[in-house]
Image (cartoon, rainbow, N blue to C red):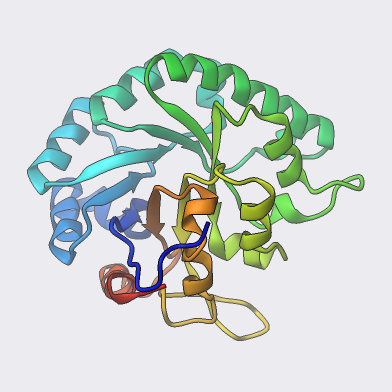
Length: 256
């Protein structure tokens, strides 16, 4: 289930957390700048005090689509119907939980309870035409009571309902291999965060293409993984717009 030699990514998006300071200062102008670079898809990390209608209007003005957004786990418990309504207005097809609170991730039973919550919330989301996903960091790959918590989430969520947004940098930091997960859980990874890692012992984050990550190897298996959307991200770039431009330019020419 490999890509054909010479394939390129046909959709490159950006996680707006990378430009969060600019978003807070000039929401509409930042979206326009993102579109000028060449991005056509974005993933939200909050609406910066805009309501769903205003967020959708800004996307439309910039010619952007937002297939996904990050939302707190608490939204699934306390305001899920409103969150789904907002997602429909903005045009999201995925809502992604970006991390788990400490109290939900101390034990394997905590992860199992989260998996159960995901299944129940995802069933409701499916009725609204929206899919629920989970985004990893490194901690989900650290053994806990003899298990890998990320595996527990994959195995105890319904593959028809719950999807995963694999952060390629954080799985590497956690000691996991994306290709091994693609092979073990084919089709579960509908989205990826595309981030690069430097060669230092600190394993710092760098612009895509400036580090050691083998993106050709990873994207050659995108069909097996089930990847539909790719979002560039850098948590703390020195110059956010320069960073997302360099990452876009690298991915645009990448063949695999």
